[in-house]
Amino acid sequence: MDKQNNPKKEQPNNPLHGVKLADILESLASHYGWEGLAAKIDINCFKKDPSIKSSLKFLRKTQWARDKVEQLYLEMDKRK
Picture 1 (cartoon, rainbow, N blue to C red):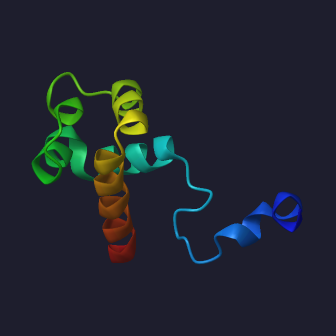
Picture 2: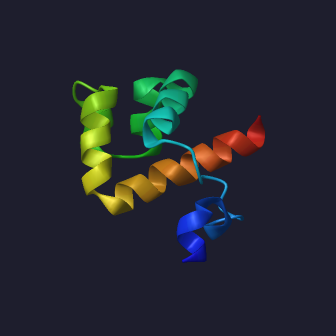
């Protein structure tokens, strides 16, 4: 019951808590560009006709790819 009343306490040590996947993708695409993203993470949604919409659709269905994108975002965020 307590978890439902205060959802922010569920993941206090998760740096991605509250960050939307769309925001992560937009940050990475503006920082690296689509070609740079494709070079760092070898997935077709970054190589062939890339867009935020198609990438979101793929990443929401494919956990291993989402994990790689989130890891790259955390590494980029640490360098800032």
